Image (cartoon, rainbow, N blue to C red):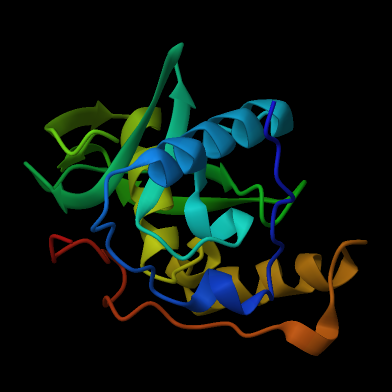
Length: 185
């Protein structure tokens, strides 16, 4: 097992857009394995490379008994349908906040070998794909909350035992509310 420490909210790597993967080699295969082992040990539905301190565009997922990963994802939204429900994050352990996401997504990216792949997600899988791709863009899910929701989330974060007030930065999503999904990534 290659379980890595998970970075918590406030760590600058979580706010830095990740670099695209350009070399598909043994190091990338090791990163994918680390992501999957760490995610499964932590009991998460997904984990992005920045969450273990690696600023590369890679994430893993384990949703509805589907275990996988994607390298250099680009998202498309086939419709305007939305979902709203509780969302959590391994980088904000134990905290959940209702977050709007698109109901359906198509993610195009690559396997660790460099071969192209496509992942079609709906419901929880769509939420996971969007959440993890946000991490690759330096966005944390609380950035997608409206002002009231974000204030409530920050209040809960400040109460969390893992919270480090010396290293916290909140960023507002660049996408307009209430539907921050008009642009494909």
